Length: 248
Image 1 (cartoon, rainbow, N blue to C red):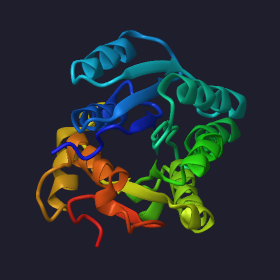
Image 2: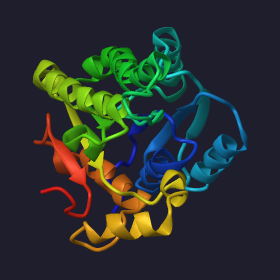
Image 3: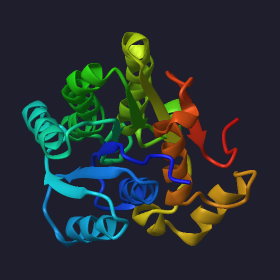
């Protein structure tokens, strides 16, 4: 059963990691996929060719999600190329971890700009198209760190917590137009970032998870499919923790 047949999804930061997996699973469920990254590289082109194998329309766009102008131009081009935008996944993000004592203003500002301002940029950019259709699903990729905080990640936690407040506000603003807005808060997920962790650190984290395993990017992607599809048609303004029960 293809839950997203005939829809068009715009996904930011989708040339690797969680964003890439969301793009692939969306395509498997019949969605046409427009996706972005800040640079044109082999990873992005490989994702594009992979998506096309599922018989959907797929296109990669070089776009800076932290730039208001670039975001508006990208949304406009996607709407022209695909005819509509049904789903937005705000996934673009970076980390610049450090204790506050050593964190530079530049690193704080960079994380807020890429992780949080990008959500404003793209949501505002796609809003006119969703309003015209009187339907849409916006999914913001937050983090369990945005709910719990984490030492050494004050900038990242602030950006992800801000995303949650933004999500709830937009849900209230656009709900009457049948546009839903929800967030996903992944926990300890197996990605390129977590693979560099010391094995003992990994074991310690996993022991804190009731399901006794790290999450996969597919776990997160399938949560996104649910929020993007009509299965969640009466759900908006919510944060779904995809963390194996790590924080309850």
